[in-house]
Image (cartoon, rainbow, N blue to C red):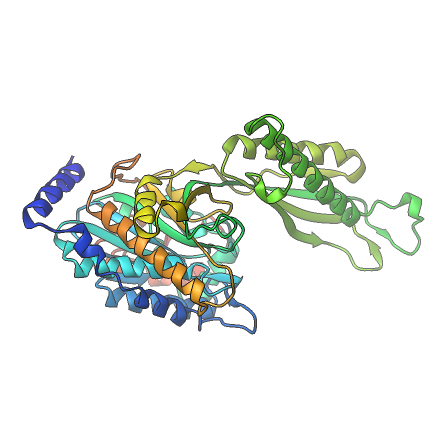
Amino acid sequence: MLVWAHLAAAQTDRTERHLSVEAIVALTDTSRVLADIRALSHFGRGATAISRPALSPADLEARRYVASRMEAAGLHGVQLDGMGTVYGSAGVENAPALLMGSHTDTAAADPLDGALGVAYALEAARVLREGGAADLTAWSVVSWQDRAGRFGALGASSAFVSPVFTPTKELWRARGEAGLAGVPVMHASGRHGGWAGFLEAHVERGSRLAPANATLGVVGAVPGQQEIRVVCASGARQADVTPMAERRDAMLEAMRVASAVDDGLRALCVAWEEGVLSRGSTCSHIRGCAATWSVGDFSVGASLAMIPHEANLTVQLRSPQQGLLERMARYVTRTVGSLAARADGRSAPKCTSHEAMAITAECLHRSAVHTVGEERVIRLDASELHDAAPLSKHMAAGMLLVPCTTDSLLSEKNAADVAAGAEAYVRAAVYLALGECDTSMGPTCIVGDARRNVRLSDPSWIDALSLDAENVASVVQSDDPDDYPDL
């Protein structure tokens, strides 16, 4: 195929021209990485944390900054798409591109959240350009929208590889308020040369790398996720005239459901670990188990004068082991069902579901060991759902974790760890872009929604979709989730 032929030709050409991986990697300047992270930390800065909710003014300001840094790094076609994702590309137009990046939206986070992976990707793009790789290969940088889940889990990266994208009404309205109505939402099929893989880096907040005295973590699997919506209902009655023995308080029942689910999942986690690990071992601390979960998104429909007649909650489950994830979901469903007779509870179909996926680790591990030494690198499974999760089903994906032990980016240790991570990340990017690493998946081309199949390698890709301005204007006010002609 053309994709494979181009890679083979590029490797031959690189050999003839003596394009050295080491010479390219030596161009890495970690001061540029730190400068980008510090600059991003000014957008949405609060008294104790940084908040840039998806499509908020602070989020859009940060994304415009990222777009300017992409252009300065030699990327072309730099634009915000219809969700606010920022994208740019460089190199050979029809070659498989290495996709690099993370996110810049945050929710009450530290300066490294998301920004770390975007800053690393920008530096890798600069190094590849300065090293003369643009005639041999291709790369792209992305800042995904809504990693924090304001409009749904991994909205932009999931939409990037989903055959059909249907936004929620809340996202639809927010797009209009952000001035993005009528702008197409990117899809991976827009890259006609296909994709060589995806590389992501993220901060790890001291729970696993620091205790292991590790400088870098190489992820071997990203967690899957399931969300189960639970509704507890009872008849509405006045609080001041209903005897306590006759009350059926939906909110209290929802709280009992949440408590029962949490207790049961903890026991399930211990039992699972005892079966997976050596006989007699236990999961003495929940952090050691290969699963996390949260119960939230409570909503109650009642005033203080009325007994709550309906209470809703969402159970979110995450695990890098698909078998464990499915068992957790079954347990939650059974638990809710067993309480239904008393609580009138019912489990709605899960809102979202991402399977656990193994991801490419060897190239990153090789780069990390080269940078800090084997004793300072550990392999681990990610405990959070990252953008690499949906992409790893369709292309080779790698993920690097960097520790953050304090809230201050300016601390000597944090700066040193960020610099080490940048060097390892850039090395891995150069390896992958120049075909120096074998991956579990070759270059891939992805088929998607024809309405969103815009040329991502074309500098004018954002204008490639002809639009009827009158129709777009009318849809901005529409509440019909099936009526999205601009996507």
